[in-house]
Image 1 (spheres, rainbow, N blue to C red):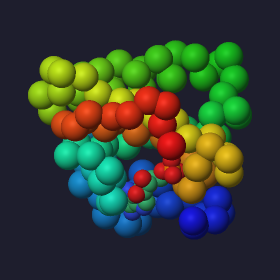
Image 2 (cartoon, protein in one colour):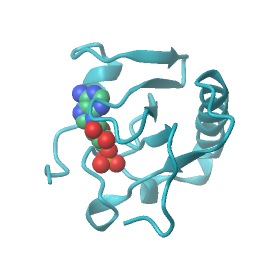
Image 3 (tube, rainbow, N blue to C red):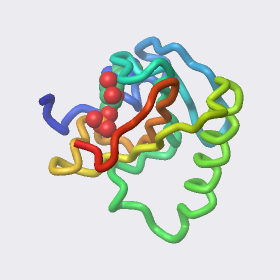
Length: 116
Ligand code: AMP
């Protein structure tokens, strides 16, 4: 598993490396995951650098809410009417590999519970 070191997503926000962007506004960016784990696999990220979920503060609440509104809108846009899975991995044991908060929006197949 890659180490939680370089902030790759900041480079995507700054257009230093390419991504297949599906949505952008002043607060966030959404783009296709480079290694999709489902027919639809989009990452929604804040433009503000928040490294991990446990670094979120009360001041971030409107931003986090906005990310979820965008996720719901994208789920509709991608036709995920049968449902979808949102995932936020946090730190090493949570399986986080990129140190910039992101929501995985995955759909187009069935998901197991509990997750692996
Ligand atoms: P996580 O393991 O939760 O930190 O998720 C990081 C995700 O970023 C993984 O699903 C990777 O496939 C994805 N990823 C890594 N590099 C890129 C990239 N350059 N463009 C799009 N997605 C990426």
